Image (cartoon, rainbow, N blue to C red):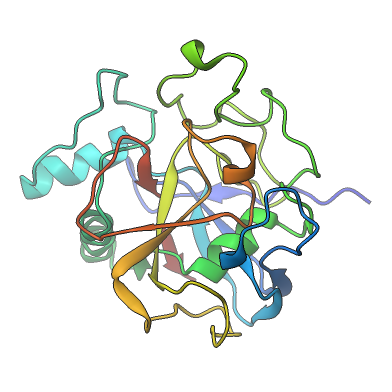
Length: 246
């Protein structure tokens, strides 16, 4: 039986499209035998998310982020000359991503926030236990990542939604831009929450990013792959996806 793709909705014109992610349980991390496995993805453990939550159908775009810039007069991040509009917002710090969530919450009266790392991986996998939401292999038609045989043609982001969604109806969870999440960085999952909540102890001078980007090779864009950086660091392949309570 084929699972129906959840319907997307938004809380207002110009705001991100959201998809309700159902509650459930999954194995977070990657086994030793997965190609590209890193020690930071260990140990694999079961995480139970008891409540649904909403997550952006796409990474936040420049069109969406620029509404926040206009309303708050915050500095506009560079688009690197690739264009704004439907391309994912890049050069956004963790602090700026949280500021955008707070602005959305004030504007709509809804509880917007960054997703937790566990919520992000659960939603990205959408029931899959393989390296990618669709299986064990990655091909150029699946996502925006660095195809090593064609590096000269791979510079920069592409508009969101250019590639098929996962089973939850989410696009670009693999590649295009790294996505900030709420959690502090921890080198391993030993002691990590098992209920899907954010891990707010450890190295909070660095925050976690997930999903990989246009400049990363296949092992770096797996569903389990992790990255981290200072919360005030900006980069041309760093963006984010918004979450909210339902």
